[in-house]
Image 1 (cartoon, rainbow, N blue to C red):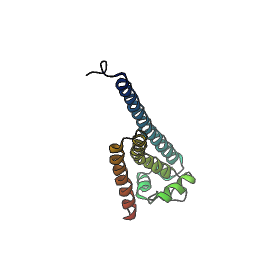
Image 2 (tube, one colour; image 1 turned 90 degrees about the vertical axis):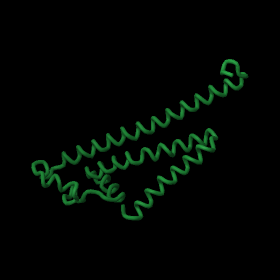
Image 3 (tube, helix red, strand yellow; image 1 turned 30 degrees about the vertical axis):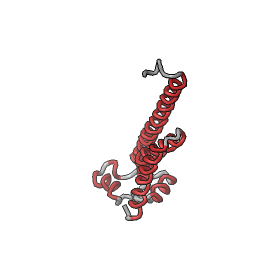
Image 4 (cartoon, rainbow, N blue to C red; image 1 turned 135 degrees about the vertical axis):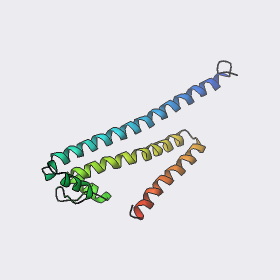
Length: 152
């Protein structure tokens, strides 16, 4: 039977379910767009900070290459290669550290999307999707922790 001939309660349930699905999709889209735009803005700010800092890389390709090779120190700190150096670099307005923070935000965006989906599925009491999403989130977090433990 189609929605017009079903019992009145059934049609209302379908409409409510469609509304919940649209709301979830909207929240996920906001999280993804927000993460990408925030990341882009942070990377742009870090790039401008790096280029406006007074160093020899303005006129030397070798010095410019030294930024990413970790040989050139900006504001007394080398290019950040760990979370602690990123956060301390951001606190001291180190341009490359701000760029790296933007990259970390971009990496964290899909993980946040999975976490938001988990919360949404739990709110909807959709146990199958809660279990699947929880497994995916566990795999993502575990891979980050194992990568950190192995020095990656």
